Amino acid sequence: MVGTAWLTLRQAQEALKNGRLEEAHRLLCQPSVQGHKRSWELLQQVARGYLTHGERCLRQDDPAGAWRDLLLAEQVGVTTRVGEQLRQALTRQGLMEVRVLLEAGEPRRAAEAIALLRERSVRQPELKQLEDLATDWAVAEELAGKRIQDNRKE
Image 1 (cartoon, rainbow, N blue to C red):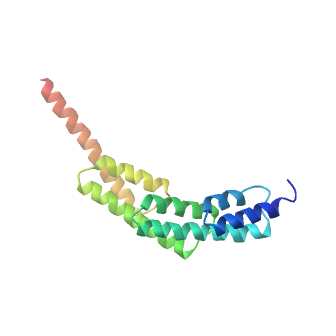
Image 2: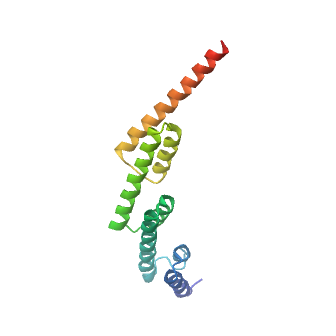
Image 3: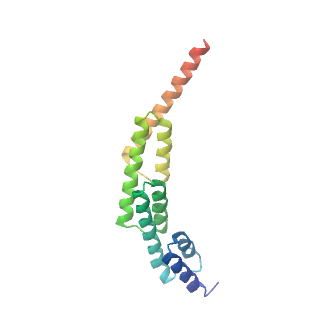
């Protein structure tokens, strides 16, 4: 609808003001406001809100929430130092989780955590090494299990 961009922008601004980031983001992605001079400024505010919330989630030991907010901020297309720092902190935490799972003898769970990091676009050389280790370990466990079963049948 022509002429409704101002209303949608106003609704997005109100949603932002009241901390409803997802609603503001949804409104700002509507075709009627795309390209409007105020939409980019509001989208940047949405991204900053996501990053602020993501940092809070990380401090409250909610890495899943922090990842969700970081990915939403990145989806908006705004890259900031805060976003880079949040990504680095979450990546370090994710790699630590993988190491802990491997040390606990959980190669399959470590492989699942690695797959999740890959989905989140984590690209660290160490991740490939951990992935190879988890895969080789899981294969070795599987082969050992088959061998034990074969020996029991005899």
